[in-house]
Amino acid sequence: MNQRENFGSRAAVIMAMAGSAIGLGNIWRFPYILGEYGGAAFILLYIAASLLVALPIFFAESVIGRRSRSNAYGALQKLAPGTRWRWAGILTILSPLLILSYYSVVGGWSVQYLFKSLSFDFTSAAPEAVSGFFSSFISSTWQPILSHTVFIALVAGIVLGGVKKGIEKFSNIAMPVLFVLILVLIVYSLTLPGSSKGVSYLLKPDFSKLNADAFAAALGQAFFSLSLGVGTILTYSSYVKKEENLIVSGIGTAASDLVFAIMAAFAVIPAVFAAGIEPGAGPGLVFETLPFIFNKMAGAAPVVSSIISIVFFVAILAAALTSAISMLEVGVAFLTEEKGFKRVPATLLLAFFTWLVGILCSLSFGPMSGVKILGDTFFDFLDHLCSNWLMPAGGLVFTLFVGWKMSKASVRDELTNGGRCNAVSYKFFYYLIRFVAPVGIVAVSLTNLLL
Ligand code: PFF
View 1 (tube, rainbow, N blue to C red):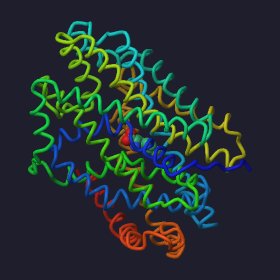
View 2: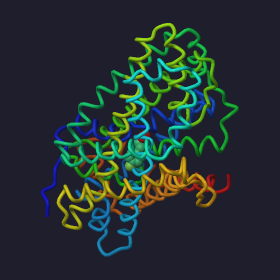
View 3: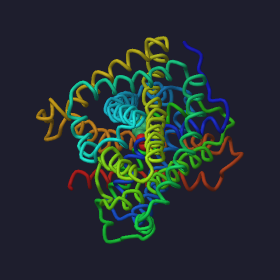
């Protein structure tokens, strides 16, 4: 049996967990979803969904992980030996690998965009060339596969280093850098002429867009953004020391994730308004609209604009990497602890698997765009499968396990550190874990099914 590692300090725990949480979901997805569902009004809904449903799931995973000190599969087997719960563990080993395979394709886009920025392509080319670049790039065959390969190789390289020397060290450097980069971007965005319309859009709530669909979107986004239901938080929590306060690190993680999503919105949306573009520009917002903006602004200040585009894509890449390593670690922990693998072969094997599946995802924007599964391209199918079904299913399993299967005494023990802290918040969250979160998940799944 391999020796288990731990994160070194509370700051390291929060950095690594926030690293998993803060990713493409915050910078790429949140601003355009916000654009679609009415700006500030959606933020309020998002906060409610995070507090009432997402955070309880986060704590359920934390309790299982730290109590068992095991990978996602071993954890359920250890805490409920001989029961069927372990099959749910298998699900949560598979889901993050599936997510990683399409996440890595988008991660690869950011690698490619960083190269483009470094060679001043966005700021020196003609506007038509820049706006047409995204669709011709993603629909080509080799370039996106190459970028996806580079991204997966980076992820594997970090995970090979282990929990302390790989994941912890990388997150400790990348997260503060990311924070500074986003601040730079906000300042830039807010100083562009015409950006104030974007600010008032973000601050003035439009409640007319808040329907059941918006609620499902808010919860789906909270799930994705906090990396829930797929064993990542469980696995990271298994590396958290006994004396650490789980509620404090969970709230720290969720708060930084939320603050970061809002910061990303303030970096993107005002710039979008300044360029006279509609905010709800869909998934192309970051990869299509922003290069266009960098190009447009280059006329007045080419150097600043080039630097900003580099800063932007370094930020996206850093955020994507800290999330992607957490997805790979779930499977690596499983193979090393349950199947006797050493870390190196386990990492390489899983990286290879996700690379192969990722190639299909990448091709689904081009040569394989006509291949449909249940009406979706391969990329969209995996995204819908994971975001709408596997993540909520995992979240439901974890809350039911902690709320109804584990003894109340052991849950209390984990969340209060043996009765030493959090007496009141423990009661609040235990109630949410047992009742509110499972009902919320089922309600949203039904909404997804019916809409
Ligand atoms: N939370 C990440 C993001 O917002 O980009 C995505 C993610 C990470 C999903 C880890 C799932 C996961 F296991």
